[in-house]
Length: 403
Image (cartoon, rainbow, N blue to C red):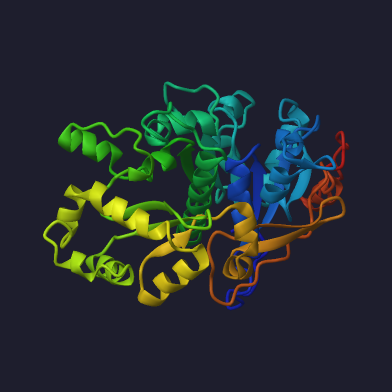
């Protein structure tokens, strides 16, 4: 591989020595880059000199700093390149000569129109792993812009999300972007393995809607096998087990219960003080409960409505019943387990210290770097260009800070 590699026996940063160039905006490509950055890769964010990634200006903002941009781009480096200009395209090719991975999020064909086809990129570096992220995939008839809201619709997610009385409902956050970003990061690591084994690069093609479609359960299989079109059913979606749902407690909170195994349900009925339900033919098996789900659901809901949340969850946990609180953001931050395992501080002179979700998985003997730097636009340009293939520093772009 092209980067300067750490001792493979040192497990602290799994991708230490890997260099990634990321020419993508908003969320899918940047989330892929952040995952690789979390794992120790040097990620160089390539931004347009005129304002950089539009996510820098997207709300929510604190004192002019985008929280979304901070979350997606912490600890990266930034260089400004105008890829419409021949000189900056040459700089990109020189940079890619020292990179292991190139993540790009332009419309298909855009890079080729700038004489930056995959073939040309791999002429600059035959071991380069190229990860394309686009709305509909490379080389397809549909080549328009792609955004997460469109992916929600195309994948079927919006059609099945919500309540029967409501219109189709898109995600309130970048669901499709983040799933595509995880898929892109996975494809990049697969490409790195192939490069190490075979000494040549590879290309990955991520369509924004496709990973979301892939996690949509039995939506397509159900239609092609049974001819049924799944639609919106609120919390009763895919009611293949019973009881399963969201229930309100006596103190106004919400909890979920998942009766996904017979033993869990039997324990639940005993905790409820209704052990006779385990012998009732209407409730004694999952198939029977599904047929009588409205009755089961009403019994469980009535019992939970008389219980306070904390005491309820403690008794269910002690009994081995699958249950959890329905958390708000405030609940997540207050949860000791989530704070210890899943949230990390992000520090910045403007933001101060905030909490954000940390790496999306955990590896043994691995300590991710602190989240303590947001790159200003092109702040690393001179250093990067001076180091790439002995080139002199590039002409400065329009440099702004991240506020």
